[in-house]
Every structure is written in structure tokens, then in C-alpha cells.
Amino acid sequence: MSANLPEQISNYLSRFTVGIAGCGGLGSNCAVALARCGVGKLIIADFDIVTSRNLNRQYYFHDQIGRLKVHALRENILRINPDVTVKAFDMKLCVSDVVELFAGCDVIVEAFDKAEMKHMIIETVHLQLPGKYLVTGIGMAGWGNSDLIHCRTSGNLIVCGDEVSEVSDTLPVLAPRVGLVANMQANEVLNILLKDFTPEAGNEAKH
Amino acid sequence: MKPGMKIILNNREEFFEGDQMTVTELLAAKNFTFKMLVVKINAELVRRHEYEKRMVTDGDEVMVLHLITGG
Image 1 (cartoon, rainbow over the protein chains, first blue to last red):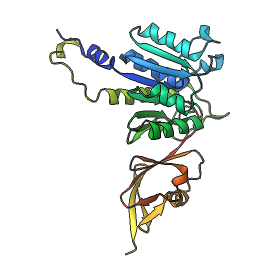
Image 2 (image 1 turned 135 degrees about the vertical axis):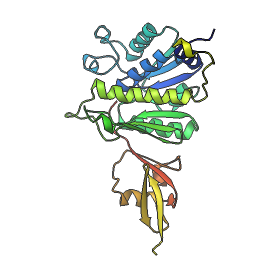
Image 3 (image 1 turned 90 degrees about the horizontal axis):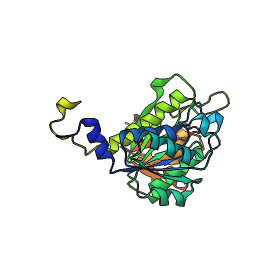
Image 4 (image 1 turned 60 degrees about the horizontal axis):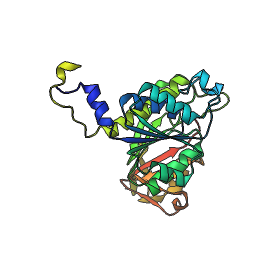
């Protein structure tokens, strides 16, 4: 008897590894979405700790304040799906780290906060990991304007976000909009990983 | 008819006079003055030090990405 479709997808995704560069609003939410779908291995990296100000958008809990984000996120992922292997790296990524940590990944998710770091990983992946898929999140501050959020592709670079809303004192990043972009990134990761997936016959009656 | 070129810039058709221009000229023509940019021509990354020399020609697909903080 064949597994139902979500199980088939989860089984299929278990062979893949996804790198998550940054575990803030984009990274924590994207990682959780991928874990729920059954991606086999997540390599997460961040240098920061959880603070009370993160809880308006990031996938952490009040009792995790003060802990390293990568450790708290690993714990949260494993509470959702204990079958995921989570490799957590407590570090601020530089060029050589990106290459070392993520060379074995099928897809890399750019989930940094700072524009300079986004620039760094885009250049590094293009120049040192050519052919590797990179899914970036650019522009998600504020609220409303859901229709401005989009996705576009150039080669193996996929850009998710509105590309205009920069975080500022008057335009904070909040859960709904960063969640939209983080989940759009996860959706694009699935689109890449599932491109050769074909459901087994005979699952129609089992949804 | 004046010579011109048609490129796809950020998923939209754009027309320019002449049959080629540098990336620097393209950025100036479009008023892209942002300092944190990623430029790709036909899916290939163009680094900042190449902007003066790298030519954009008819039919090219160009992505200019403004990197902004937030995440």
C-alpha cells in the first residue's frame, strides 16, 4: 500500500539538505516550514541570542529568552519534527564559512538581516558555489501591501520579498509580513527540491 | 531609424538608444544610485569593479537587485 501524498512528499524530502543563513524572522520561520514538510537535514547558522524584542516575529518562545538562537531553533524544530537532523552553528558567517558550511546543501536560504550580509552571501554563492540554488528574502518591513510581495528568478538565484520596504525606526519588521516572505522562501525551496518528484500511483483515495 | 537596443530589465522590456552600453551607463540612465546592488546579466553575476567595462547589449536579460536591510 502506498503512503498518502503528504507522507510521500515528506519521505522524498528527507534526502535533502537545506542551509539557513541567519535565524531571525526569515530564517526561523522558513526553517520551521521546511521541517514541517520533512526536509531531512537543516544546517542553521546565527550568532545572536533570543531577546524579548525578537518575539514579535521570530519562531522562539518567551522561556527561550537569553538562549542562543541556533540552539533554541534546533529545539523548536525537533519538537515539531524529531526526524529532522539539525546542525546548528553559533557563528557570524564570513565568506569561507558560507562555502564550508553550505557546500553540501541542495539549496541555501539567505535569511540575514543586514544588506551587507545579503550582498556577501549572494556574491559568495555565485562565485564560489556556482550552480547552487540561493533563495533570498529582500524587503518585508511594515504591514499591509501583501500584493507587493513577489518572487523572481535569475539563474539559480531566487528573490522573495517586495524589494523596497527597508526596516527603519518608523517601519519595523513584524510577524505577518516577514512570515509571508519566509514561507515564500520555503515554498521556493520546495519547488526546487520537488522538481523531479512524482507521486506513486494509487494514492488518490487516501488523502 | 536610430539604432537602439531592447533589453529585459527586472522582468520588463526597456529600450535604449545605441547598440550597447556599460553597466555603469545603464545604472546612471535608470537612476539606480543605491550602493548595495547586485547586477546579473543573463543570469551571470557582474561584480562592481566590472561595471565600467561590462557591456549590456540587445536582447540581454538584466537583473538589478537593491539589497535592503530587514529579515
